Length: 144
Image (cartoon, rainbow, N blue to C red; front, side, top):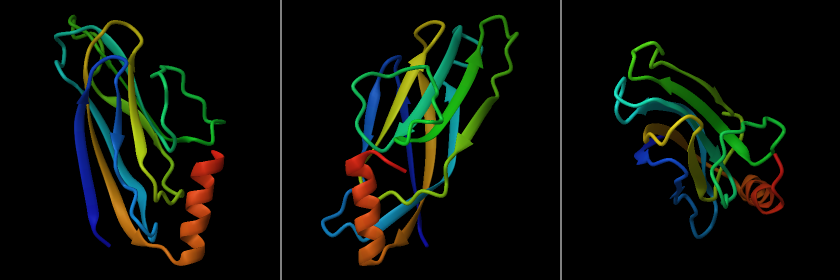
């Protein structure tokens, strides 16, 4: 199936909506890749957390809670002007959840106010009526 890619730059505290909703809900997506890189590698001190949620968030948080059924993916990077930090990242991807509604990408810098770039790949899949109904109800109820 086709891969759709998204990329963006989020300032500290920013939340971005990725529009995935269709009229019939029969198009679903699985997260296949989620990568992060600082906007200014080794030029800004930052400890960024970027998360993807299935329901709109009111604020961006640096707290990662794997018990939250609305959390689809989480990633972190550490960046320093001294070059002390490795600009690599660690990530967790929940690729077993079919998504057929909009998703929300949040960014919180827990150290400063640096911006963070993200790259996201979603694999598009065709859902039958039952799968579409289940995916939509999970989003409405906020469950996994």
